[in-house]
Amino acid sequence: MTDAKPTLNRETLARVLRMIRGIVADPEVGRKATVYSAGLIVLLLTVNGLNVVNSYVGRFFMTAIEEHDRGGFWRYALLSMAVFGLLTLSAVLLRYIEESLGLLWRKWLTWHLFRRYADHRVYYRLQKDTDRVENPDQRLTEDVRVFTASTLSYALMLANGGLTVLAFSGVLWSISPLLFGVAVAYASVGTWLTIRLGHPLVPLNYDQLDHEAAFRTSLIHLRDNADQVALSRREGLWIHRAGRQLQQLTGNFMRIVRVNRTVGFFTTGYNWLSQLIPALVVAPLFIEGRVEFGIITQAAIAFTQLLGAFSLIITQFQSLSSYTAVIRRISLLADKALEDERDETRAVAAATEEGRDRDHISYRGVTLHAHQNEHELIRDLTADITTGLAVQVFGPDESARLALFQATAGLEPVDAGFILRPPLERILFVTERPYLVPGGLRDLFLRPHPERLDDPRHEPELEHMALSPSDDEIDKALKAVGLGKLPAQFGGLDQRQDWDSVLSLTEQQLLVIARVLMCRPQFVFLDRPGTSLPAEKLTSLLKLLRRRGITPVVFAERPDHRELFDAGLELSPGGKWRWNPKSAAKARPAN
Image (cartoon, rainbow, N blue to C red; front, side, top):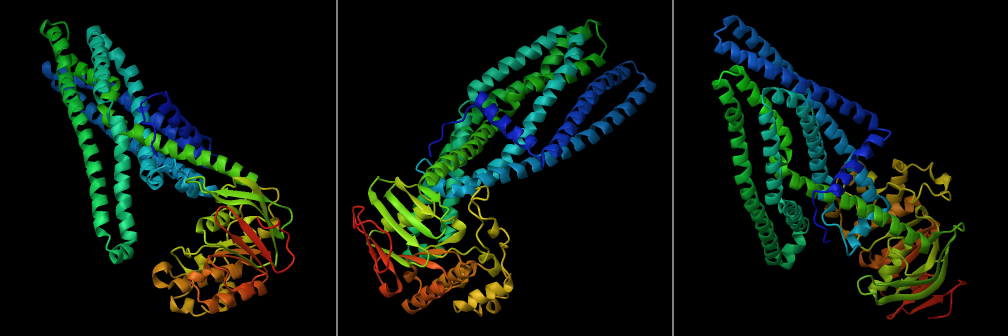
């Protein structure tokens, strides 16, 4: 999708604050995060206090050298070593707690975003959305890592800067009010010029993240589809596409390099000049005998600390521009996921109702359109599929069949009418191409999670059924479909395998049917099972499903195996349909 370009503004800060409030309010990790944060504040106060002490120790040390005071020299040298030791201990602890808090926040935020992305099948709808969020995988991994680490780093810089201003303003003012004013003016002008020179970096860094992700996605696609690409001899297409993406990636990065060059000219000169300013202001006072020699050292330390606090944007502008882009990308994913969850849940719930009558699936005036061009696929479909009524849905228009299949599953909204059905834990859907998760055989037989545990109509009697079945249940299901030797062939139920690679398409589909037999839903919807199963095997499986009390609803291009079904739903071009019952079934006249 075309995202609005991110900028450094109040909206950016508001997004960051929302994500900070989220972890603080979390009942599980909020207390731990608060304790870590308090520890950071204590250590920041300690470090800044020691820095002030160190400035005076350095002043007295240099004065002792100037006055040839051997005793004072060694006294302040030892004191300086003690201060450095305490600073080292505090800085290391500060870094440790910062990284611990960052890891805690990253884990919480990644899981929070992933649950929102994966729950309610938001991941599916985001892929189908015309205004889609690009590269959600990168946003959930790399962007979250950068965001949590950078946010803590910048928060500590701001807090440290504020404490530094409080600690060293008085020191610098007591040495020279003029030097204090120069520090404020110098940092203010430098910040303004840095923002003016570097403002193109924010959108450029945002685009760079997308270009990097798009190039990586192409390489992953080529790896995952190596067989198909090699057999179809489409290497040239991928070489051309990857080359174009690489050109866009490097071209955008070159623009970033040019802006960085311009900003670098200014910030480098700014930093070098800042080292000379304290001497220019304070050295004449020493020459006139108005201050001791150690004051020059203390003034340099105080000026450097204060200027660093005032110059946060100047020194961190390049990384801040990337950080702003990351905030926008994460926020967009979270907001879009929440928006899709709310909108689609309302739309699907309005058109797909879970009825109290658990024994049938009813289509009431259902109209479905193709989302790409609003072409009418099905018009005013009204029919009932009761438990035990095997139905075949067929027709030449694959889009119409697929739309009805997905609408029944709740994946797509219904444009008009509604679908009345049992909850999805009582219905299983078997796609044309089997989906087998890499892992052990046991993983393939996990029962589906209930569709909506918070629904008052959710059936508590299903909760006692373990998601992971017993070995005996799996063994019986495999034997029923003729795959009884599979566990021994692959080293047991828990031996990890890439099933798409080691099983034939027929074996993969049989494995999916075995899971259906074990789960024993009321209904099973099968999309074109004849493409992967021989006719004789499909016939025996459909009979087996019916014997086990599972009602099959088969989607196919042609009305094969008519004798196995009690009714047929024919979908014709132009949204027309015809219901052909062989036994009593409620339906409207042919449309």
